[in-house]
Length: 378
DNA sequence: AATACAGCCAACCGCGGGGAG
DNA sequence: TCTCCCCGCGGTTGGCTGTAT
Image (cartoon, rainbow, N blue to C red; front, side):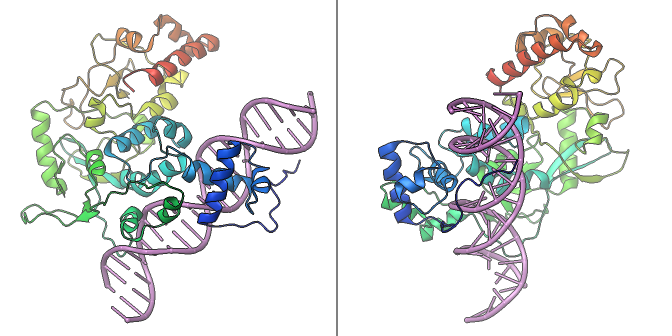
């Protein structure tokens, strides 16, 4: 069955909306309410597709929309939510009042995605993986458009015409490294939110400077000795190019997948939620048998493939140095801890998963999912 | 000053879910 | 149950413009 076009394409205007069109749309919706997008353009006298009207309204004209910079807090929320939900922009946007899915999607694509994917893990010898921002020499390129708007009032003139004045804060886009010549450094964005994201173990990145990997390694070793929090690699991460145990004495650099920072973990973030779900909790063949007692919360959970019990290991409450010096284990997750957190009443139910007890599995899975989602820890 | 490069972001596009008839 | 239609979503595009060369 062919799909009817959303509207007659003939004679319809495309591209940027004019102030007049905005005004017409706003007045119409104020008088008639949202909805009936298909008939709206005709009734309102707009030469636009209904979808275009809807998009314009939702993403730009609707009351209550925040314009301007994504705050550091919003930034963190986006990172966390994206780690757990993936590209479910509308869902992520629903947790950020005044932000639209389109805005968040654009922000992710423009800022966070590139930054996170540009993180490389530099590791070797006795160090855990280090995440540093890759120095990328830029040739040309724009700063944030919002910086531009500061001067040009880009498109906001239209908004002003209808009585809304957005908040536009100037962004100091980037700076050169400080004058400390002894520490090699690179140029990187100084957006506060971005700096917060790339903070790793409190040592990898000094304020305004991404340290040389070797310097970072040294600092990180100190951190390890003093009881820093680290995670353990698994074979599964290996497959996903997320965390590959380095060979002894070998320094390697590779792109990370989902990014997790200690800061995020301590904030209760669950950046690996999607990973957990897709690779472990939802994989009946890989389901865990928790074995040891402890008290750590599964704010970030890693599977210990080296363990015969296929234990889960959590990322906080952990201070052990890896047996071979290259990776570092955390306290095993306990069943009781998981019970309390996620309302799983009977762990034996979970044991049935691998034997095809799908009905029970689905119920419990739902419990966990909703608990994870609704819980304060999220 | 001119040009090329880089990237932000508004808007478009196609698909799928779900409701109505 | 099927078909049609509306709506919403995520992916993608292209215009615009700052910056480096």
